[in-house]
Image (tube, rainbow, N blue to C red; front, side):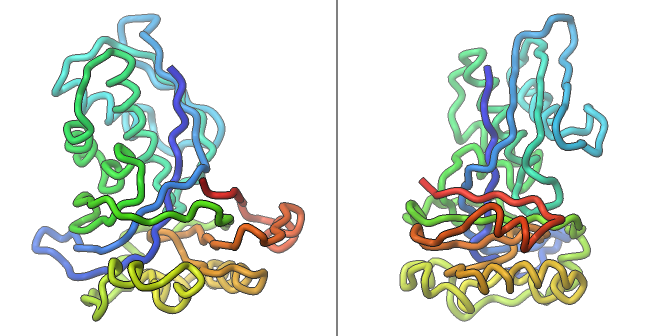
Length: 277
């Protein structure tokens, strides 16, 4: 079985407060985008489950990979036969795009289908929540309001169909702990849902905010420069995704966004562009 785990972007990200367990309560809208890895799962040729990776270098041993953690998390609940897993990485790591979380979630859904387990999405999302905060989102893989530590999800009526997205990932990564250390939690005066109900993407700029940007931009000037450049070339809205380091721009479908021009503006960056469906 072959599946294509996709990335996500964060449309707004408010850090509400710090919890007694050391985590933070957030408010963010997660939106799926079609930048994908490739994941294949087949019955094992031997007696043990294996993971083989290719594409972008994965900086962790197989047993620490979120894909293997997903297999083990499901196996603890529903004993599984061994499988061979092949993961081809395309989505950049350390980008705020949720690539590893998506790989893990798609592992759960693929195993469910491969072995005809007939497990509900709610069951799989609960299983995914122990792997990482972003993982449950990819079980549903539809626009969601994420609250709590990011695992409390509510489906929202939001579509960017027909808009063009450009994602730029510079050759730097922002450690999540460092990103949080620069933020002063604060409950916003207006909730994200109120803003999305009132405003079209053409009016999001300056109103839909990622709280990580202020401190991250101070530390990483190249990330700020990407956001500025996206606006300069016509983005209706641009923002860092998650805690970085990727920055995305939303453009009208009529925008003439050429790969050659983007590569000239961002010669050392990974670039993805697509019409949203």
